[in-house]
Amino acid sequence: MTAAERLAKALSFTEADRVPLDLSGTTVSAFSKYAFASAMQYKNWPVKYYSQSVDPIQQIVIPEEEILDRLKIDSYRVGARRIMNFEGKVQDYDTYHSIIDPYQCEWRMKKEGDLYFNQATYPYQNYETVSEALDDFSIYDIQEYRDVLAADVDEQLTHKGDRGLIIDRNCAGLTEMSLRLRGYDTWFVDTMIDPEGVKSLLDLLVDHKIAYWEMLAKILREKGVIDQVQVVAEADDLGTQNSLLLSPDALEDIVMPRVRRLIEFLKKQFPRAKTFFHTDGAVKQIIPDLMEAGVDILNPVQYSAEGMDLAELKKEFGKELVFWGGGIDTQEILNKAKPAQVRDEVKKNIEILAPGGGFVFTTVHNIQADVPPENFWAMWESVMEYGKY
Image 1 (cartoon, rainbow, N blue to C red):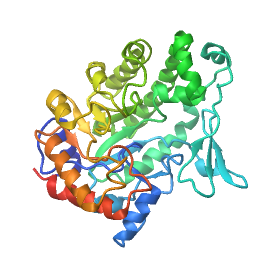
Image 2 (image 1 turned 30 degrees about the horizontal axis):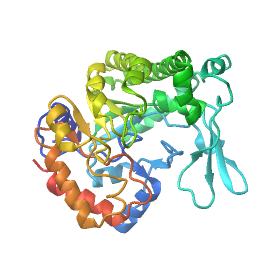
Image 3 (image 1 turned 90 degrees about the vertical axis):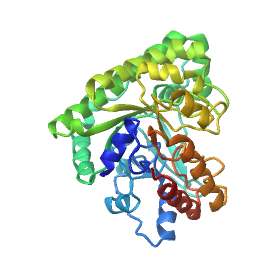
Image 4 (image 1 turned 120 degrees about the horizontal axis):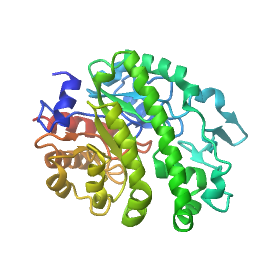
Protein backbone atom coordinates (compact mmCIF):
# COMPACT_ATOMS: atom_id res chain seq x y z
CA MET A 1 0.00 0.00 0.00
CA THR A 2 1.38 3.42 -0.93
CA ALA A 3 1.33 6.35 1.46
CA ALA A 4 -1.22 8.14 -0.74
CA GLU A 5 -3.49 5.08 -0.66
CA ARG A 6 -3.13 4.83 3.11
CA LEU A 7 -4.11 8.48 3.48
CA ALA A 8 -7.05 8.06 1.10
CA LYS A 9 -8.45 5.26 3.22
CA ALA A 10 -8.25 7.36 6.37
CA LEU A 11 -9.97 10.23 4.61
CA SER A 12 -12.80 7.91 3.52
CA PHE A 13 -13.28 6.45 7.04
CA THR A 14 -11.74 3.11 6.18
CA GLU A 15 -9.08 1.24 8.12
CA ALA A 16 -5.84 0.77 6.18
CA ASP A 17 -2.79 -1.29 7.18
CA ARG A 18 -1.90 1.37 9.75
CA VAL A 19 -2.79 4.89 10.81
CA PRO A 20 -1.28 7.48 8.42
CA LEU A 21 1.49 9.63 9.87
CA ASP A 22 1.98 13.34 9.20
CA LEU A 23 5.03 15.17 10.56
CA SER A 24 5.61 17.79 7.86
CA GLY A 25 2.53 18.02 5.67
CA THR A 26 1.54 21.54 6.78
CA THR A 27 3.08 24.44 8.67
CA VAL A 28 1.05 23.43 11.73
CA SER A 29 2.07 19.76 11.78
CA ALA A 30 5.80 20.00 11.31
CA PHE A 31 9.22 20.19 12.98
CA SER A 32 11.06 23.05 14.60
CA LYS A 33 14.51 22.82 13.05
CA TYR A 34 16.04 22.47 16.52
CA ALA A 35 13.81 19.54 17.47
CA PHE A 36 14.46 17.95 14.09
CA ALA A 37 18.22 18.27 14.43
CA SER A 38 18.28 16.82 17.94
CA ALA A 39 16.04 13.90 16.96
CA MET A 40 18.16 13.02 13.94
CA GLN A 41 21.44 13.33 15.84
CA TYR A 42 20.11 11.09 18.59
CA LYS A 43 19.83 8.23 16.07
CA ASN A 44 22.94 9.23 14.11
CA TRP A 45 20.72 10.04 11.15
CA PRO A 46 21.72 12.87 8.80
CA VAL A 47 20.22 16.27 9.57
CA LYS A 48 18.80 16.88 6.11
CA TYR A 49 16.09 19.40 5.37
CA TYR A 50 15.33 21.60 2.40
CA SER A 51 17.19 24.89 2.32
CA GLN A 52 14.08 26.84 1.29
CA SER A 53 12.61 27.40 4.74
CA VAL A 54 8.85 26.95 4.52
CA ASP A 55 8.28 29.12 7.61
CA PRO A 56 11.35 30.97 8.91
CA ILE A 57 9.29 32.85 11.50
CA GLN A 58 8.43 29.61 13.30
CA GLN A 59 11.77 28.09 12.22
CA ILE A 60 9.89 25.20 10.60
CA VAL A 61 11.71 22.85 8.26
CA ILE A 62 10.69 20.09 5.84
CA PRO A 63 12.91 16.98 6.01
CA GLU A 64 14.54 15.84 2.80
CA GLU A 65 13.04 12.90 0.95
CA GLU A 66 15.45 10.37 2.46
CA ILE A 67 14.27 11.28 5.97
CA LEU A 68 10.60 11.37 4.98
CA ASP A 69 11.04 7.80 3.76
CA ARG A 70 12.87 6.65 6.89
CA LEU A 71 10.19 8.16 9.13
CA LYS A 72 7.42 6.56 7.03
CA ILE A 73 5.65 9.89 6.69
CA ASP A 74 2.52 9.62 4.55
CA SER A 75 1.91 13.29 3.76
CA TYR A 76 3.69 15.81 1.56
CA ARG A 77 3.33 19.58 1.52
CA VAL A 78 3.19 21.70 -1.63
CA GLY A 79 2.58 25.43 -1.46
CA ALA A 80 3.94 28.87 -0.75
CA ARG A 81 6.71 29.74 1.60
CA ARG A 82 5.65 32.17 4.31
CA ILE A 83 8.26 34.71 3.19
CA MET A 84 9.66 34.40 -0.31
CA ASN A 85 13.39 35.05 -0.63
CA PHE A 86 13.61 35.08 3.15
CA GLU A 87 17.39 34.93 3.41
CA GLY A 88 17.89 38.07 1.34
CA LYS A 89 15.49 40.09 3.49
CA VAL A 90 16.88 39.53 6.98
CA GLN A 91 18.44 42.61 8.58
CA ASP A 92 21.18 42.12 11.15
CA TYR A 93 21.31 44.38 14.23
CA ASP A 94 23.52 44.33 17.33
CA THR A 95 21.33 42.07 19.44
CA TYR A 96 18.69 40.70 17.06
CA HIS A 97 17.77 39.76 13.51
CA SER A 98 14.81 41.52 11.90
CA ILE A 99 12.60 40.87 8.91
CA ILE A 100 9.59 42.66 7.43
CA ASP A 101 7.02 40.22 6.05
CA PRO A 102 4.89 40.89 2.94
CA TYR A 103 2.16 42.40 5.15
CA GLN A 104 4.59 44.98 6.62
CA CYS A 105 4.75 43.30 10.03
CA GLU A 106 8.23 43.34 11.58
CA TRP A 107 9.51 40.17 13.24
CA ARG A 108 12.58 39.97 15.47
CA MET A 109 14.68 37.14 16.82
CA LYS A 110 17.25 37.84 19.54
CA LYS A 111 20.70 36.55 18.81
CA GLU A 112 20.71 34.95 22.23
CA GLY A 113 17.75 33.26 23.85
CA ASP A 114 15.20 33.14 21.03
CA LEU A 115 14.27 30.02 19.08
CA TYR A 116 12.02 31.75 16.55
CA PHE A 117 10.97 35.23 15.44
CA ASN A 118 8.46 37.23 17.49
CA GLN A 119 6.23 39.96 16.13
CA ALA A 120 7.56 43.42 16.98
CA THR A 121 5.30 45.83 15.07
CA TYR A 122 1.67 45.95 13.97
CA PRO A 123 1.41 48.15 10.86
CA TYR A 124 -2.17 49.42 11.31
CA GLN A 125 -2.25 49.63 15.11
CA ASN A 126 -2.21 53.41 15.49
CA TYR A 127 -5.43 54.16 13.67
CA GLU A 128 -8.42 55.01 15.83
CA THR A 129 -10.63 52.39 14.19
CA VAL A 130 -10.13 49.62 11.67
CA SER A 131 -12.34 51.52 9.22
CA GLU A 132 -9.94 54.45 9.42
CA ALA A 133 -7.03 52.07 8.88
CA LEU A 134 -8.69 50.68 5.76
CA ASP A 135 -8.45 54.10 4.10
CA ASP A 136 -4.69 53.53 3.93
CA PHE A 137 -4.72 49.74 3.76
CA SER A 138 -2.92 47.91 1.00
CA ILE A 139 -1.97 44.29 0.49
CA TYR A 140 0.56 42.97 -1.95
CA ASP A 141 -0.48 41.42 -5.26
CA ILE A 142 0.06 37.67 -4.94
CA GLN A 143 0.71 37.55 -8.69
CA GLU A 144 4.09 39.15 -7.99
CA TYR A 145 5.22 35.74 -6.72
CA ARG A 146 3.67 33.63 -9.46
CA ASP A 147 7.00 32.63 -11.01
CA VAL A 148 8.59 32.01 -7.62
CA LEU A 149 5.67 29.83 -6.53
CA ALA A 150 5.69 27.89 -9.79
CA ALA A 151 9.41 27.18 -9.40
CA ASP A 152 8.92 26.13 -5.77
CA VAL A 153 6.07 23.79 -6.75
CA ASP A 154 8.30 22.22 -9.40
CA GLU A 155 10.99 21.59 -6.81
CA GLN A 156 8.53 20.34 -4.20
CA LEU A 157 6.84 17.86 -6.53
CA THR A 158 10.21 16.34 -7.44
CA HIS A 159 10.45 14.95 -3.90
CA LYS A 160 6.84 13.91 -3.32
CA GLY A 161 7.37 10.18 -3.86
CA ASP A 162 4.24 8.12 -3.21
CA ARG A 163 3.05 10.33 -0.34
CA GLY A 164 -0.37 11.93 -0.21
CA LEU A 165 -0.40 15.44 -1.69
CA ILE A 166 -1.41 18.28 0.62
CA ILE A 167 -1.55 21.82 -0.68
CA ASP A 168 -1.02 24.46 1.97
CA ARG A 169 -1.99 28.10 2.49
CA ASN A 170 0.13 31.21 1.91
CA CYS A 171 -0.58 33.06 5.15
CA ALA A 172 -2.27 32.78 8.53
CA GLY A 173 -6.02 32.66 9.04
CA LEU A 174 -8.42 35.56 8.76
CA THR A 175 -8.63 36.53 12.43
CA GLU A 176 -4.95 35.82 13.03
CA MET A 177 -3.93 38.06 10.13
CA SER A 178 -6.25 40.77 11.46
CA LEU A 179 -4.62 40.52 14.88
CA ARG A 180 -1.18 40.86 13.33
CA LEU A 181 -2.21 43.91 11.33
CA ARG A 182 -4.07 45.79 14.07
CA GLY A 183 -2.51 44.45 17.27
CA TYR A 184 -4.22 42.11 19.69
CA ASP A 185 -5.84 44.56 22.12
CA THR A 186 -6.78 46.93 19.33
CA TRP A 187 -8.45 44.25 17.22
CA PHE A 188 -10.61 42.94 20.06
CA VAL A 189 -11.78 46.50 20.72
CA ASP A 190 -12.48 46.80 16.99
CA THR A 191 -14.91 43.88 17.16
CA MET A 192 -16.93 45.83 19.73
CA ILE A 193 -16.83 49.38 18.37
CA ASP A 194 -16.33 48.85 14.64
CA PRO A 195 -17.57 45.38 13.65
CA GLU A 196 -18.37 46.49 10.11
CA GLY A 197 -14.79 47.63 9.66
CA VAL A 198 -13.56 44.27 10.95
CA LYS A 199 -15.79 42.50 8.42
CA SER A 200 -14.41 44.67 5.62
CA LEU A 201 -10.83 43.81 6.60
CA LEU A 202 -11.69 40.11 6.72
CA ASP A 203 -13.30 40.36 3.29
CA LEU A 204 -10.09 41.83 1.87
CA LEU A 205 -8.10 38.98 3.42
CA VAL A 206 -10.49 36.39 1.94
CA ASP A 207 -9.97 38.01 -1.46
CA HIS A 208 -6.20 37.79 -0.94
CA LYS A 209 -6.38 34.12 -0.02
CA ILE A 210 -8.66 33.32 -2.94
CA ALA A 211 -6.18 34.97 -5.32
CA TYR A 212 -3.45 32.71 -3.94
CA TRP A 213 -5.51 29.53 -4.20
CA GLU A 214 -6.65 30.42 -7.72
CA MET A 215 -3.03 30.94 -8.75
CA LEU A 216 -1.86 27.69 -7.14
CA ALA A 217 -4.72 25.75 -8.78
CA LYS A 218 -3.71 27.10 -12.19
CA ILE A 219 -0.08 26.09 -11.60
CA LEU A 220 -1.11 22.59 -10.54
CA ARG A 221 -3.35 22.23 -13.62
CA GLU A 222 -0.50 23.29 -15.86
CA LYS A 223 1.68 20.63 -14.26
CA GLY A 224 -1.02 17.99 -14.62
CA VAL A 225 -1.20 17.11 -10.93
CA ILE A 226 -4.31 18.86 -9.67
CA ASP A 227 -6.25 15.58 -9.57
CA GLN A 228 -3.60 14.15 -7.22
CA VAL A 229 -4.42 16.70 -4.51
CA GLN A 230 -5.95 14.90 -1.55
CA VAL A 231 -6.06 17.69 1.02
CA VAL A 232 -6.36 21.50 0.91
CA ALA A 233 -5.12 23.03 4.17
CA GLU A 234 -6.48 26.27 5.61
CA ALA A 235 -6.58 27.67 9.13
CA ASP A 236 -7.91 30.24 11.55
CA ASP A 237 -7.34 30.06 15.29
CA LEU A 238 -10.81 30.50 16.76
CA GLY A 239 -10.27 29.12 20.26
CA THR A 240 -8.30 29.75 23.44
CA GLN A 241 -7.36 27.19 26.07
CA ASN A 242 -10.70 27.63 27.82
CA SER A 243 -13.12 29.29 25.41
CA LEU A 244 -13.79 30.53 21.92
CA LEU A 245 -11.81 33.54 20.71
CA LEU A 246 -15.03 35.57 20.47
CA SER A 247 -18.56 34.91 21.64
CA PRO A 248 -20.49 32.43 19.48
CA ASP A 249 -22.72 35.23 18.23
CA ALA A 250 -19.75 37.42 17.29
CA LEU A 251 -18.03 34.53 15.53
CA GLU A 252 -21.19 33.78 13.57
CA ASP A 253 -21.67 37.41 12.63
CA ILE A 254 -18.09 38.44 11.88
CA VAL A 255 -15.94 35.41 11.07
CA MET A 256 -17.94 32.41 9.92
CA PRO A 257 -19.51 33.97 6.78
CA ARG A 258 -15.96 34.68 5.54
CA VAL A 259 -14.79 31.17 6.42
CA ARG A 260 -17.74 29.77 4.47
CA ARG A 261 -16.92 31.90 1.42
CA LEU A 262 -13.30 30.75 1.46
CA ILE A 263 -14.15 27.06 1.85
CA GLU A 264 -16.85 27.26 -0.82
CA PHE A 265 -14.20 28.57 -3.20
CA LEU A 266 -11.76 25.79 -2.26
CA LYS A 267 -14.42 23.15 -2.88
CA LYS A 268 -15.00 24.50 -6.39
CA GLN A 269 -11.30 24.74 -7.23
CA PHE A 270 -10.36 21.34 -5.77
CA PRO A 271 -13.55 19.24 -5.92
CA ARG A 272 -11.75 15.92 -5.32
CA ALA A 273 -9.86 17.11 -2.24
CA LYS A 274 -10.83 17.19 1.42
CA THR A 275 -10.74 20.50 3.25
CA PHE A 276 -8.40 20.63 6.26
CA PHE A 277 -8.99 23.36 8.84
CA HIS A 278 -6.59 24.16 11.66
CA THR A 279 -8.00 25.85 14.73
CA ASP A 280 -6.48 25.56 18.18
CA GLY A 281 -8.21 25.51 21.49
CA ALA A 282 -11.66 24.91 22.91
CA VAL A 283 -13.67 24.82 19.68
CA LYS A 284 -16.07 21.90 20.21
CA GLN A 285 -19.03 24.28 20.27
CA ILE A 286 -18.39 25.43 16.69
CA ILE A 287 -17.42 22.07 15.16
CA PRO A 288 -20.95 21.65 13.70
CA ASP A 289 -20.65 25.14 12.17
CA LEU A 290 -17.28 24.28 10.64
CA MET A 291 -18.67 21.05 9.23
CA GLU A 292 -21.68 22.90 7.81
CA ALA A 293 -19.22 25.33 6.19
CA GLY A 294 -17.53 22.42 4.42
CA VAL A 295 -14.69 21.46 6.72
CA ASP A 296 -13.83 17.76 6.31
CA ILE A 297 -10.74 17.58 8.53
CA LEU A 298 -10.11 19.13 11.96
CA ASN A 299 -6.62 19.93 13.20
CA PRO A 300 -4.88 19.98 15.70
CA VAL A 301 -7.57 18.46 17.97
CA GLN A 302 -6.18 20.13 21.09
CA TYR A 303 -7.52 17.71 23.66
CA SER A 304 -5.94 19.59 26.58
CA ALA A 305 -8.36 22.47 25.95
CA GLU A 306 -11.72 22.83 27.67
CA GLY A 307 -14.38 20.44 26.34
CA MET A 308 -12.11 18.72 23.81
CA ASP A 309 -12.27 15.18 25.21
CA LEU A 310 -11.12 12.81 22.46
CA ALA A 311 -13.58 10.03 23.22
CA GLU A 312 -16.51 12.44 23.12
CA LEU A 313 -15.28 14.06 19.91
CA LYS A 314 -14.87 10.66 18.24
CA LYS A 315 -18.33 9.55 19.36
CA GLU A 316 -20.09 12.73 18.24
CA PHE A 317 -18.24 13.57 15.02
CA GLY A 318 -15.99 10.64 14.12
CA LYS A 319 -18.15 9.24 11.32
CA GLU A 320 -18.18 12.50 9.35
CA LEU A 321 -15.13 14.51 10.47
CA VAL A 322 -11.52 13.36 10.05
CA PHE A 323 -9.30 14.06 13.07
CA TRP A 324 -5.86 15.10 11.85
CA GLY A 325 -4.07 15.47 15.14
CA GLY A 326 -4.82 14.67 18.74
CA GLY A 327 -1.91 12.24 18.65
CA ILE A 328 -0.10 13.69 21.63
CA ASP A 329 -0.20 16.91 23.63
CA THR A 330 2.76 19.21 22.97
CA GLN A 331 2.21 21.60 25.88
CA GLU A 332 2.90 19.26 28.80
CA ILE A 333 3.52 15.68 27.61
CA LEU A 334 5.70 15.40 24.51
CA ASN A 335 8.05 18.06 25.83
CA LYS A 336 8.01 17.34 29.58
CA ALA A 337 6.96 13.74 30.30
CA LYS A 338 9.14 10.65 30.47
CA PRO A 339 9.39 8.45 27.35
CA ALA A 340 7.23 5.77 28.99
CA GLN A 341 4.48 8.33 29.58
CA VAL A 342 4.76 9.47 25.97
CA ARG A 343 4.29 5.88 24.77
CA ASP A 344 1.26 5.39 27.01
CA GLU A 345 -0.32 8.64 25.80
CA VAL A 346 0.19 7.77 22.14
CA LYS A 347 -1.25 4.29 22.67
CA LYS A 348 -4.30 5.66 24.49
CA ASN A 349 -5.06 8.30 21.87
CA ILE A 350 -4.66 5.90 18.95
CA GLU A 351 -7.03 3.46 20.63
CA ILE A 352 -9.63 6.24 20.85
CA LEU A 353 -9.24 7.87 17.45
CA ALA A 354 -8.12 5.12 15.06
CA PRO A 355 -11.10 2.70 14.95
CA GLY A 356 -13.05 2.99 11.72
CA GLY A 357 -10.48 5.24 10.05
CA GLY A 358 -10.93 8.98 9.92
CA PHE A 359 -7.68 9.59 11.80
CA VAL A 360 -4.26 10.87 10.77
CA PHE A 361 -1.64 10.85 13.50
CA THR A 362 0.20 14.06 14.16
CA THR A 363 1.12 16.05 17.23
CA VAL A 364 -1.08 18.80 18.64
CA HIS A 365 0.65 21.55 16.64
CA ASN A 366 4.32 21.60 15.63
CA ILE A 367 7.09 19.67 17.37
CA GLN A 368 8.80 22.48 19.23
CA ALA A 369 12.44 22.98 20.16
CA ASP A 370 11.92 21.84 23.75
CA VAL A 371 10.96 18.27 22.78
CA PRO A 372 13.71 15.86 23.93
CA PRO A 373 14.85 13.45 21.23
CA GLU A 374 14.05 10.49 23.50
CA ASN A 375 10.44 11.63 23.60
CA PHE A 376 10.24 12.13 19.86
CA TRP A 377 11.43 8.59 19.21
CA ALA A 378 9.17 7.17 21.91
CA MET A 379 6.26 8.81 20.10
CA TRP A 380 7.33 7.63 16.65
CA GLU A 381 8.00 4.06 17.73
CA SER A 382 4.63 3.93 19.46
CA VAL A 383 2.84 5.09 16.32
CA MET A 384 4.55 2.31 14.36
CA GLU A 385 3.64 -0.26 17.02
CA TYR A 386 0.14 0.73 18.08
CA GLY A 387 -1.02 2.35 14.83
CA LYS A 388 -1.42 -0.99 13.03
CA TYR A 389 -4.95 -2.08 12.20
